[in-house]
Amino acid sequence: MEQDKVLKKAIRIRRSESLPYGFDKKVMHQVFRAAEQKKKRSFILGLSLISMVSAVMIVLAVFILTYYFSFSMHLTLPQISNSPETKTLFGFSCYIAIVILALLGMDGYFRSLRKKRHEKHS
Image 1 (spheres, rainbow, N blue to C red):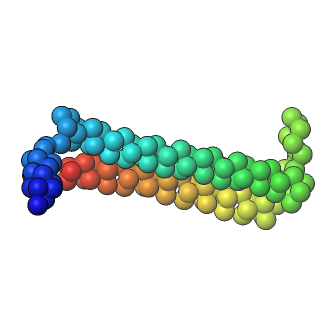
Image 2 (image 1 turned 180 degrees about the vertical axis):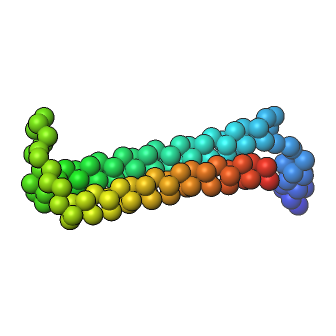
């Protein structure tokens, strides 16, 4: 019986105690730090993936130029024949390059709009 009273008193004292000073601030600091680390990790992952894809594209371009078109990588420029087929291929390549650059520009523009809109609502 005596132990029950002591136990009840200890439980009441424990319930009335508050959290230590600065507990909320410490927890929020850890949450923000974890979110920042996640954002940094995703940025580094994205940057490394972009770099890897760019390197693969450069290697493939060199491979195609060297083996498919028999293009010499020396300092001297090869003689380029002006046949209708090469003009068509060159025109098509320029068209694809312009489309890609336009799409990249539009992507950057729409991402900045989305970021501004997201910051407004936050």
